[in-house]
Length: 71
Image 1 (tube, rainbow, N blue to C red):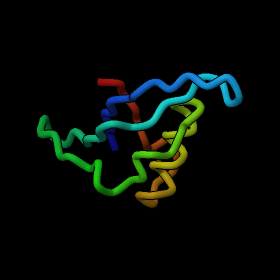
Image 2: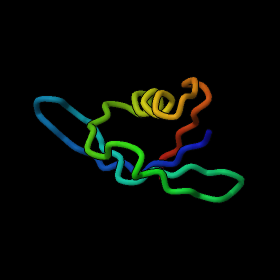
Image 3: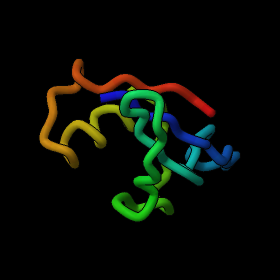
Image 4: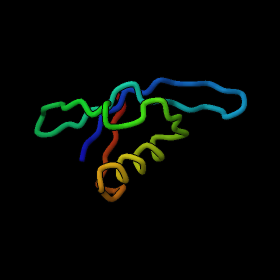
């Protein structure tokens, strides 16, 4: 499943670099579908890899079945 996400960077002295997901879409046959309402957009991800694992768990996929692309 192909995911496109719009990250919002967050700098913190305690935690370091992280980001939240401002918007999340899936790209199916050239059509974007907004999935932002299906995730916790306030969660601070440390890396795109962590986001990929979270999306795989959320949608019942294996992590290698999720492709991420920043918007």
